[in-house]
Length: 182
Image 1 (cartoon, one colour):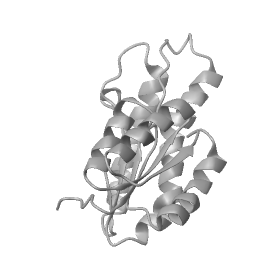
Image 2 (spheres, rainbow, N blue to C red):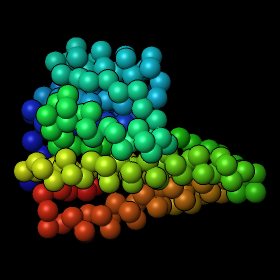
Image 3 (cartoon, rainbow, N blue to C red):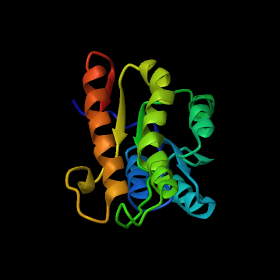
Image 4 (tube, rainbow, N blue to C red):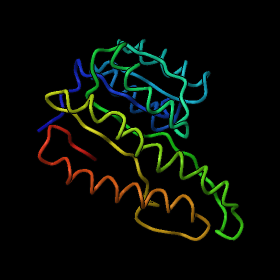
């Protein structure tokens, strides 16, 4: 069954550029209302302008996926502004190259907080709002490095392998509900 994007509310993290911006623009063209997040105010504003130019109703949220308090507060802000949430796309992420020996644990934890715990927290925070809808979906963006593990990508692969496993398990747990997980 195809997801009905028209008149749905989609939250897209990391919407300030790259894949997040492309997803937001595509959703705007399909008639979705958007809550876009990014930690860079300039790139977020440009993405929001582009989506508005495509005809979408857009709310703009300066946001850091590593901030657990900000993640917990976001669903109420989005529901207050848009009345509902139908789709959450956890796209925000960072990269960190270097061997395990070269990378400090503080940097490793920084990456894990954004690339793994950020999406996990988003899923937990948005679950009640998504359950309130007749049909909803969560998309957790992973990477080829969630399937293969080249040297020099220890932290990134750990986060993306973890996110892939989390998403697959969550899909099974929610299979009898109105929420799909990809």
